[in-house]
Image (cartoon, rainbow, N blue to C red; front, top):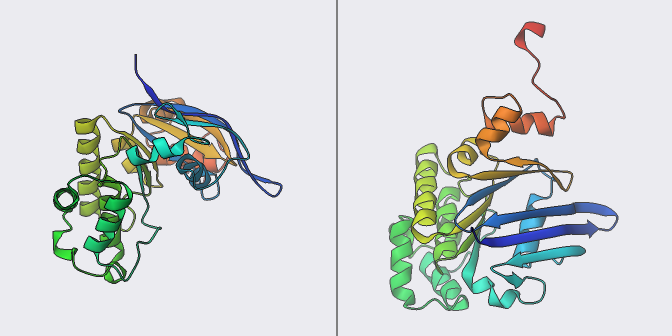
Length: 251
């Protein structure tokens, strides 16, 4: 039987009287790639933040790698990592210095060698001695991914992993993530607005709206169930509360 490595039960987060996440529940199996989708404000980032322990839930349970994240996350975090192009690394430090700092925080053995490996993996060797604040948006995305790969995580949480990348670079990064996931049996949970990326990478999709999961399934099953041709059309149907798009003949 497949091992469940992320389990969320009745997860809620209130900000005042507003429920940013409202009774979310899901389970994710080892070695799978799962997308968490939703329009801006749907609750995706809040959910990821609670998984990482950056936000405390108002109620509910989070279990990762068999541990209760509300009481024992220190046992799990060395085996997990996170990447977002919207979270800056210290600007004055070079890329290499940033990776050294994070490598020590994660207790990465053979750190110099591991930094060389991830630099090759993400093709960032030429920018290792540049200040992080001087990088382009696309370069920052690659460096953020390099930081996330340092500890060879069993669970990798990704927020818009190919944001700011040109189509060729984005395709290359998707292939790298797919190869890493297959080689290491890693579990990937990603938030993305790129529906082509979701179709290509993901085994399963969770769709959030107003803090709740309103639909889920494989990309193919969601497309078939909604009578659509792409995940983008499915996403728009749910975001706009419509069963199907208006026909061109009716316009």
